[in-house]
Image (cartoon, rainbow, N blue to C red; front, side, top):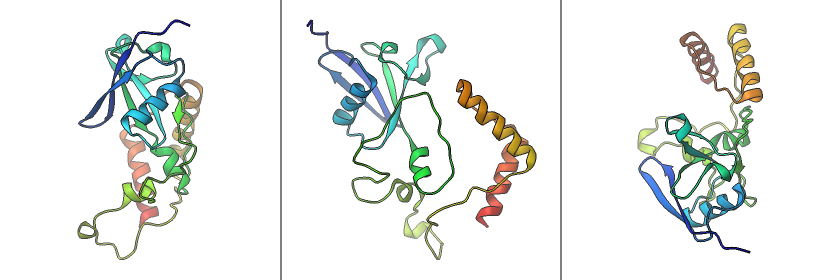
Length: 185
């Protein structure tokens, strides 16, 4: 068995948070192995997916579906999969992505301090919050107008078939925000 040349990857973990990932045996043979290196060396505990800087598309980030798409000194980005975490809290979301998602087997939407990621994301400091009670345990996403539901359904089908993302027009955004506002109030 011939040993691969060492490789380095630039890993974007968040805004103003970039690390160098050292792979002594070269690029791993699977996304799962790459994810394990990232978890171990970068300390990522949440479930995530990876994107790579795709030179064929003007250095835009694209979902990483094969390690063959990266090489030594490539840039990859860790995208924490908040949709899964939010779904675990009772929201009805359907994250159907062709990208690989890596969720630690011993974690179920909680972090090292024992609080859920939802609490981390949604909680405000006491001084900034004027609420008399905490966040609800679940939030029922409301039904939107017929036109909005139709557009969302078509967009969901397009995403499942080809990975096409929805770019909502102002009328659809307004309809969604109005529905969410009514549900929250």
